[in-house]
Length: 150
Length: 150
Image (cartoon, rainbow over all chains, first blue to last red; front, side, top):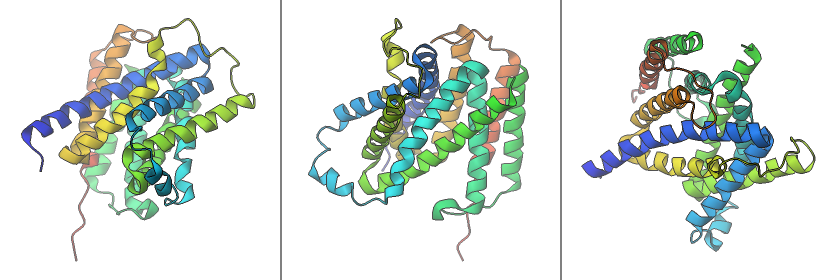
């Protein structure tokens, strides 16, 4: 069960996560401007790996290694997407600015997930497009345009 | 502003969403923190290999900039933990709305004050309205029509 305190912590931590992502995208882009966008993407993943090693050190035992054999191999390509994603972010942010980049990200994410929901990709649950969702997407696009012109 | 750059920004988010889906699937087999760890390891190896074959800027990794620019990967890992915790206690929809809201406002604030290497862009009324519209739209889009049981 979720207690009131847990709920409050959850609200604060999800807000921190959002702020953290905005800060992280800008940090990575600035690093990319100094050392190169691919190098920045590499270091982001390397630092993430080292940090994860500290957090997970006890969990990375034999059990983890046997678990590694279970997932289908194609799931491992998520890391390739991650690198390309950070790489492109590093390229785009200095050119468009942070707020505009993030609003385009949100807009495309919502559009993409609406389409993915409608089709039901990867055997996930299907959610048909509704009028509400279309109106929502139009509002989002208007918002992006306002920031673009602002 | 170049349409191509905006397209790249959009594609970034498509990769991001795909990467998240793959990561979630990986998490079912090995645990969500472990999945993030694997993602970072694969990413480091992939980006490292690209740099080794000579695709990159050839600039030195260590430039005369503050060490905070190297900590992006750490934030990424913490963010994921916060996200997992909040989703458990608040549900994915509320977490997403909180996340997007703080992300957009933080990016506006970072640019307003020209923090972390960002050029200064004033937080105008237009920007405020644009961000508000995106949040309202995201709220509408996130209200999925639940499928009725037969």
